Image 1: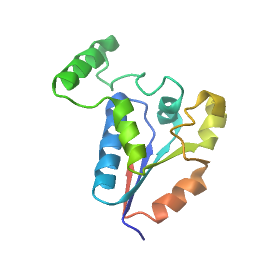
Image 2: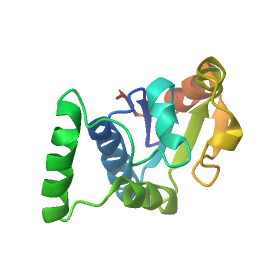
Image 3: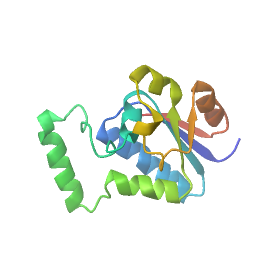
Image 4: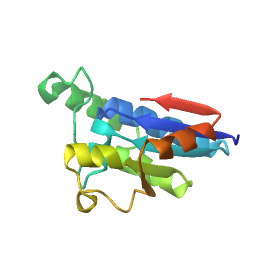
Length: 139
């Protein structure tokens, strides 16, 4: 078992994506390997133009909650999702897109950000990543 973190991103909510990328970047910065497996609504964030779209969380409040949080994050110099994703990739993080979800939700490879995705795989791909990990998270 290597010093590795594997994260499942099941939700497309902005707060959960921030959590996954912050944890993934933290693991990479500490010298660990890190992979993120995007499935179901999380996979929608890997669509072209999808990284910054989507609801904030359960506190979306018809868009007002997201607007307020983004404003506060900008004031606090919190990096946008696009920057966190770029950092994750630059530090050697691995992004896996769930093929089963692609089929179920009608998402084709042409709709996804090929520049972000390292691998397409099903549950066996995730299980292998998790089997090699010291830390696994479901977000």
